[in-house]
Image 1 (cartoon, rainbow, N blue to C red):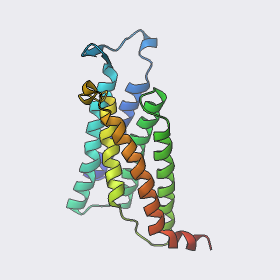
Image 2 (cartoon, rainbow, N blue to C red):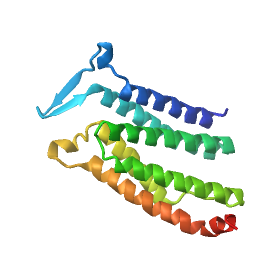
Image 3 (cartoon, rainbow, N blue to C red):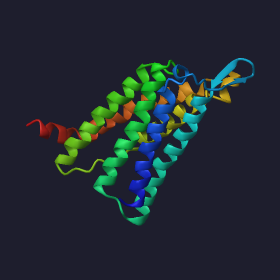
Image 4 (cartoon, rainbow, N blue to C red):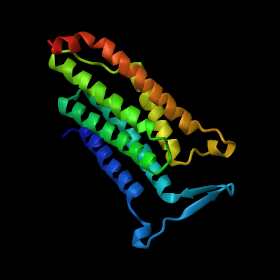
Amino acid sequence: MNLPNKITLSRIILTIFVIVILIFPFEATGFSMPKLFVNETIVIDIKYLMAGVLFIIASITDFLDGYLARKKGIVTDFGKMLDAIADKVLVNCILVILAATGFIHPIIPVIIIFRDTVVDSIKMIAGNQGHVVAAIKTGKWKTACMMIGIALTLFYNLPFELWNIKVSDILLIIACVLSVVSGVQYYYMNRDAIMESGK
């Protein structure tokens, strides 16, 4: 368990804390989370701000673990697997919760999870045939838009909400479009390996 893998594992632990904060029934236990009032029109539940801070920290570890692994030359298959799991758990679980609580449209997690499932399957098929599937730019842009969009959503789209500019929604929509585009790209880049696996 090298340092990058420990950082990746910390992302999974942080994700668990975020999930607990977002879905724990505080009201049922008699404890009510404080609320903030912004501009007398926006009511903010503190638990989403807490989750937002932890989400940002977890997102930073997503960059840090890969950077350290490459810099120190300690990239491992276990680290790649753990990183992929941590990424999917962090993003997909929170998207599902945000959809269930009405913060975002349910189609967003549906598109993202469907695409991730297809792409992961393509990577598995290609990997079994000895092909290395490298990350592509549209996939990286998708991840960046998704991370920022989720963070803004957890922070109630502030400060943009004050001017009624739905930046968080726009970023999540862009992320969905890039998800589809990158998914199609992954397919075309690996279609020979996919066809070969069906023979």
